Amino acid sequence: MQSSNTRILTTHAGSLPRPPELRRLLAQGDDADNMALSDAIESATVDVLDKQIKVGLDVVNDGEMGRESFFTYVRYRMTGFGGHSDRRLMADMTMYEGYRKKLLGMTTSAHRVSLMTAPKAVGDVHYRDTNAIDLECARLNNLLPGRTLVEAFMTAPSPGIIAAAMQNDHYPDIESYIDALATALSVEYHAIVDAGLLLQIDAPDLAMERHALFQGQPIEAFLAFANCVMTAINRALADIPRDRVRLHVCWGNYEGPHVFDVSLEEIWPTIAQAKAQGLLLSMANPRHAHEYLCFEEFDLPKDGILIAGVIDTTTNYVEHPRTVADRICRIAGTVGDPSRIIAGTDCGFETAAGFVAVDEQITWDKLEALSEGAALASQTLFA
Image (cartoon, rainbow, N blue to C red; front, side, top):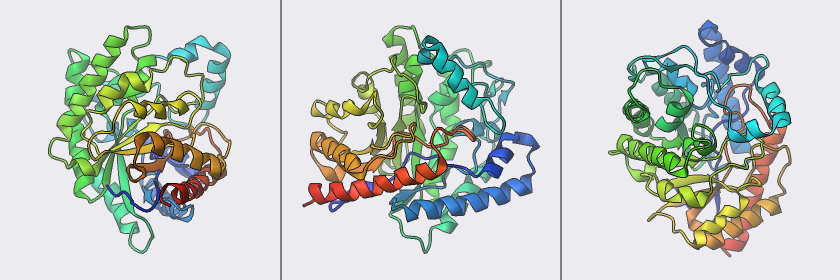
């Protein structure tokens, strides 16, 4: 994983706006025209890569153009899934009825992929073959020559988010399910790294499931789950170099009250165990913007890099570049070494096809503000 001793590098958390036609095709699932879908993915990937470079991002990806969501796509790559889950609403959605109705109205219209009714485990979970992930990696790698960037990454889900949102109707307990998922996902993790790309593991479960799957339960129950997931992730990464991995942890990419979110302080001991050099954490949204102060007490793991979310991915406010720079400088001040900071976003901008909180044009303006803010911060931090 590249860092810099002269400036703050920039990246984002994975998903980027999809074209309307691609959303429509992805929402059709098995009924989609495969040739039309392939052409739409190819075209969208070229476009989203060029846009990332145009706004000045250094570490880029394919925007997850070929996936229906950041984790439910695994149903096409693994055995054992069928039927539908009945995911429990997050605790803050249950508490605020008016807000819940508004949010559900955004997520249930046409051409949107629901993350609340994903398939569930009904049999043994195994990874089928690497054809799909190999194609994704090759598509991205083939587009990189001739474009100006520092590095490229590819995302993959943690076993914990799948276990939490794609319910278990087969294994004797959630620990066994997580273990099987980690074994299966290890195939995808290795394929990404073997293709020469950085691997980003998306693990909102390490924070969000406190107010989702484990809402109303003792904190100890959630932390036991989180530690089980982290052990499984590290096992799946056992022979992958730590400096080829970044881990993304967030509290749910939705504009809600988030009053039941677990604190970063409570989950940091678990996150710090990750066999990942890069740790991507939400630090821009109003509920967690103060938690950079945790690094006055906690140290990053040895040689670790903090990919700090300094752009909120749930609001259409375009952050002023000086606001971004101020955030970066404050975070770098607590970490103590600006070369161990990369500026990023709190989460993705379209984590499931059609679930869009931020207008597409505004998304790119926000990412341009990220690049401009990082440049301003660099003038201060590397003077």
